[in-house]
Length: 123
Image (cartoon, rainbow, N blue to C red; front, top):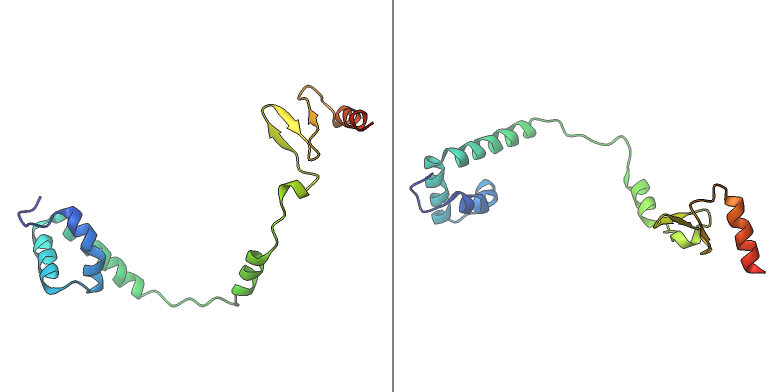
């Protein structure tokens, strides 16, 4: 709880600008006044500054090879619609629908029964 006019919610909204140093003087003074009175927000800023300090001490990592070509190739890969894959079986409402639209009942243990039904329907 604070006695300043700034609330913790208003502080949260201004936090990124405060950390970046882009607040105008009056807004910065208001944030700093709030920080001097609010344990929650001052602990948050202290934690974020520690994270920033520790992260700046990490070494720069360079990938062993250029990864973009592999990523780009996967992004540019053609999309194969499900209907174009005849081996695909979709299950809907307890029944199995084959790629050609013929229904196979769940009580049929074997696909061969379904194939016989398909052949009979085609005649």
